[in-house]
Length: 123
Image 1 (cartoon, rainbow, N blue to C red):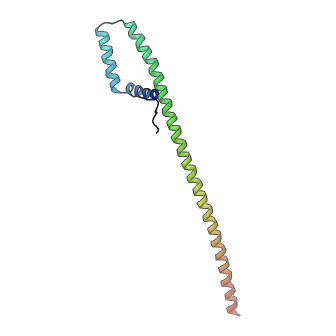
Image 2: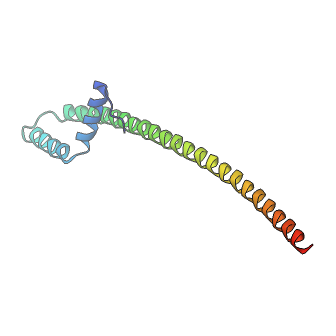
Image 3: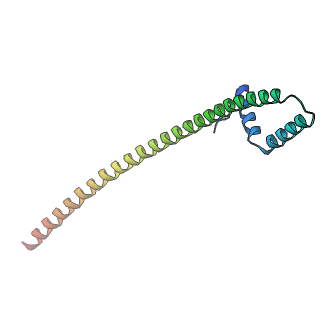
């Protein structure tokens, strides 16, 4: 899988990783506890959490899209390898068919020669 080299891509992946980890749970638990202990304005907390949810959704979708693109690229590469392998197998099968036809022709010719020799020996 190809790594995203752009700074924004790296930031997006880092945010998606952090938000999906236990560190995020711990951070948010402490943050909410401090907010409630110091009795800060709950409307501001609600606004902050809503904005965080919006941006988190966007970051997760971006990360998901990037993962899907990587997977699509990987599948395309595998399909190309499979196609080359099948083409190679077909060529080998065609070569084997030609060789078998040659062997059958030689076998038929040998059978005719043996029959001719028998006829000659009988006479």
